[in-house]
Image 1 (tube, rainbow, N blue to C red):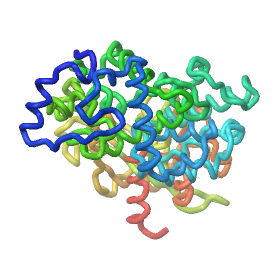
Image 2: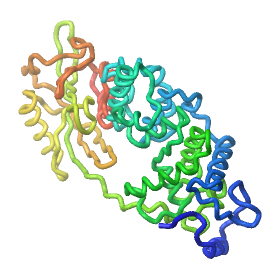
Image 3: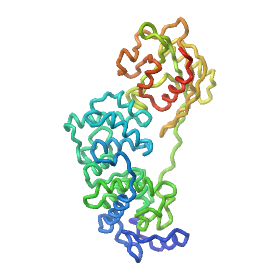
Image 4: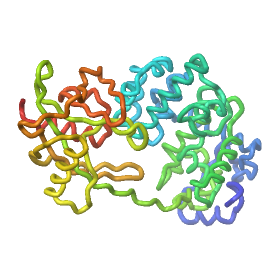
Length: 424
């Protein structure tokens, strides 16, 4: 691990001779070359790096909806949404979420189903559940006022080191280092850090190095600027070093190592799960006459906790279509007491999580003529769309599927089935 960005001048000449453009003078470098004092650690040169970054940000920052004001509730919602989700995906959903839940009080008063539905399609649904739980605690414990220190913020559900530092710095201008994947990459290149940035000790060191660069009184601007630098300039693969305000202070650039840093361990391939899904229909009677489709709620803990889905069962990777039909028929009978006829296949669905991949064969099925759907199962209209317990089994009208929170894979199944289903 190198101690700073200016430890080896001999490699600078080697990098330039290899054809890289000659660095131009900027706020961190004088006419005679890089200033060795610009190495962070709280030195005046380190703070000049931070000031140069803030000036760059003021000129180049994107107009994003969460930058319209720095209200802590809005900052918090944006930071949680932006974890693991692209900016272009988040932007319209952020506006929609705030329209639905304009304040921490509104979010605290909402039901879990309502929040999950608004979050649908963003993935990592524990974020939505924790947002609601934290909102309730902010209202009940703090009277609706956000804590303003990273330490207090981290006591709230779902708020870790990064989110706490981001909210404290952006909303309250606290000099806290908000270190996410973008920041790890930028700082590893700036300082030439040769150890994997996934290691906790390396991340703590990067936090200290980052905090040392924050200009006095400009923590909010610096935090957003550093995130912007990582998102627009110091990107994975081939960074756009010609646009970087830190280029002349960057170890990776000066040594021609931007493609090598940051160091990351090799990723393991996601585990593949094969399954068979049944879209089961039955006819209602009385006031609820018409076709109904069966949906079940996932358990309250674990992957996609509390979300709705169609019944499905894991299968062998090489299971044939006939074998999948037989497994589904048996599972629906044993698990739900349903006697069904499988009418045929629907398009298969593949969905990749960060650690898991689903490969699902999908079948349309119906309760066998003369057989009855399980008695006592609730319907959405009878429960106000607020089903309660894990494993809930609900017969929904096709139009009611829009009001339920599905994961992406099962939402695609629902949309495909509705387009292809026969007229009632």
